Length: 385
Image (tube, rainbow, N blue to C red):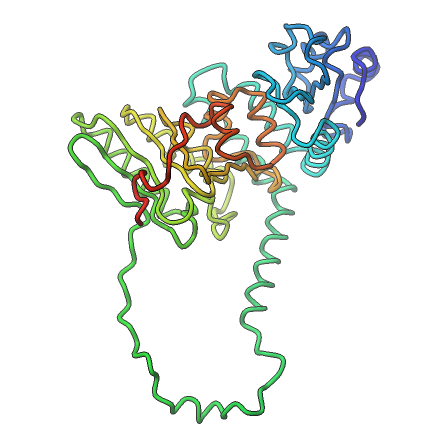
């Protein structure tokens, strides 16, 4: 779909109200936001089952009301554009190519995302988390996620097979296996270390420090880590003397997001929705009522970007990078990102961040309001773990 003049878009809608939808293979509509009639397209577009993008090379010719109209994303060539505009990374053409490719590949997830974001800021943030879970669960039963999961499992099986395969050549100078087994080891077996808890919790005075503790997996969120966070926040809710929560991650990253080894492990979407809402990390954090500061560093992917955004304050190390990869999986964010991110960066920028799947660094996150400060890693909780 090329850039349309507003008049052409309105004429197409008049001729066929369903022309722009994932069912008719036109799930994205890109309109010149500076041309007359753009606001009429946006007003109608806020209810269309498609991704509605407004573009403008020069913001001086764009009517002020466009920012409050129904566009899902607003793109411009101008650097440092004010909210809600996104300064197109690499230029308008490149940014539009990324969006068109993503939406064409994952049309159902893409349209579900923008429909969800249109609703997310209109009510209580907790209701937005529940609405997200409904969309996530529906998409889990869809063909896009099924295709991604099948490909992911195939690639993982290939990697396991490659690691376990015997070497293709035998070194003739190597001793026979039976002989090698008789050689005593120069390194006696070490005692097995007890497994560390997935979440560390420490109280000091009136402050509760909660640390994601799967450093070898970049703090990927599995069942144990989720349950540990839920338990920590439920504990905080019961302690009237607490005045602050500090949330941090051990190791090289705050969190790389959901643990892919557990994706698709629940038997049905209905049960997945029940688990997601009854054992919700963000809902339990919000229910605690205790002001929280998230200290993030390294990879902040998926849940690693979504969860900190629920906190009262977010402090990022200079190496922090934020990325939302769920659309490529045929899903929407599942850790509350469609509720937390738009409340920090606005609906339009949240839509671009999630749809594009492209990373942003700490400086851009600070400029957008995704984080509140950039500070050295060595001064953060768990920096020495």
